[in-house]
Length: 256
Image 1: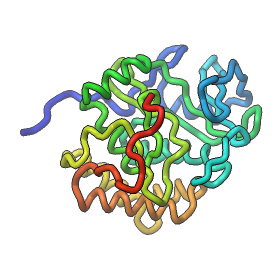
Image 2 (image 1 turned 90 degrees about the horizontal axis):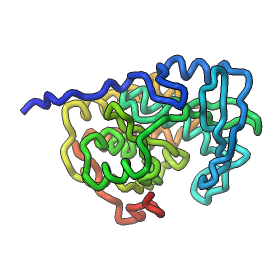
Image 3 (image 1 turned 30 degrees about the vertical axis):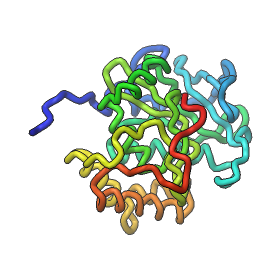
């Protein structure tokens, strides 16, 4: 049976504290604004994260590399680049599940700058996870592709138009399997035609000197990009969402 359910436009304008903004315009302002003015620090974040303002009052989250806590299983100072790479993969595969994110200079040096999204809140996100909402499938597929090691409920942003975005992608793209997520409801479920097309597009973008491989080369090392390509090929071969690995905890902690 064909799915005739209307799906939100993945490139639609995004809600912010100052109103809707088109994705391309957000990226333009984030790149070109000369100043990033801190408004406050995100207290609950494990790495230094600041709510900031750029031209026109647009709010962003700024995560400077110098504020990253060292991790034993990721190269030091690499989390901001991974945040940026996650956005590039989301865009290249037309998933639209990551807010606009760039790598640029800021008040504390180079870091990831991500558009602040006005969303429905953590409780709504938890409700969607508990209800196994089908709108989470795109994010679930994205996490399997980028090998997300920390998909908590609090990292999920439900939007008013039905789209669901994800944030906090610093622990992604490891060469070793590290998938930890609260989104296991679709494990071993077969992919839809649309999901197969997304995966095929990723394989094509990484093959040889594909466009996506070139975009990721300044952000990830070659082994990590090769592992990304291998994951996409494995997903294409199995034609279903992955099962938890017996060699790695399947759930993040805390869950929210």
